[in-house]
Image (cartoon, rainbow, N blue to C red; front, side):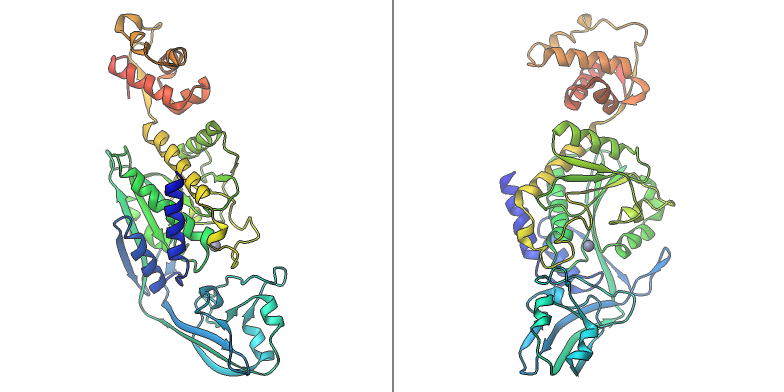
Length: 424
Ligand code: ZN
């Protein structure tokens, strides 16, 4: 896990300098990098396309942007960090006094050494983001401001990667790809999703796993709009975000609250002994808002470490690659793998011999336990599976009610199935 943590961190560092937004070449460059790890199907949706209640906006690209002081020195420079330009800034080329420029400068007075992340997607504006202490040091005088950007008809870009399963029913794993130089809030999620896809492809999972790399809100809405007819195939899902900070894990339940993914995540987090929080659904945060909108109401929860807006580095220049830890990303990845292993194996069974206990010894089922170090547990698991296989309870119920490890319960179900005592 250490090695994979380092690999994910290296991926975060590679993607970090790119100027991502909800559209534009920064998203494409990011997807190009992800595409080196897992093959991607990239979709380009034209500006003006109606998607649910929204419209795909114009595409934004920026080549250069700076504020130069009266001596001609660049005191705010896009080349140093993509955070310095207000996202979706319209182009500007002007000279103005500091007093006038101030109206276009965004700072964090409470965190004077940090640069904020700001956007203006749907209102035409231009602006710069900088540290309060940088602003405080600026002398009065005439400043040159230049943003060499374009806002023009183009495309919204998103990508999918599918790990084929044994059945067409799908699990979606979604992460946002629209934040510029912010490591925990988007890049760590992208990195964990990428390595999760690679890990799942090592075998053939039961479900088909569909990974979505899309800009927040408008990207998820675009995907939903273009997949309305096959949305019934989506049985479960997770929105991954803030996947790399050093805090404990937080799972936010789906809108349903008791979807299978909600039960699986709670079981895995509790059984693993990891420090964690489980919180109820709110119609805010990341793209669980879209997947759990009432018309879709999908069984999609959200996995983060420290949740949305829950840390002082959130949406600032302090959310840099140092803020995310290889071991934290490796831990997030491990939890996802554990959860999907349970989800993939969870079934409901019917006891075919429900009147009295069937004779296990006669069927060689006790002998099958002989070599196991957990013989007693394995035997109890068989009795529990037989007892709760009434078509109502699934293996996760059995594990929860018996207090036995899910793997032991699943192994018991396999043995009982092979002996013809239960059927899925
Ligand atoms: Zn964010």
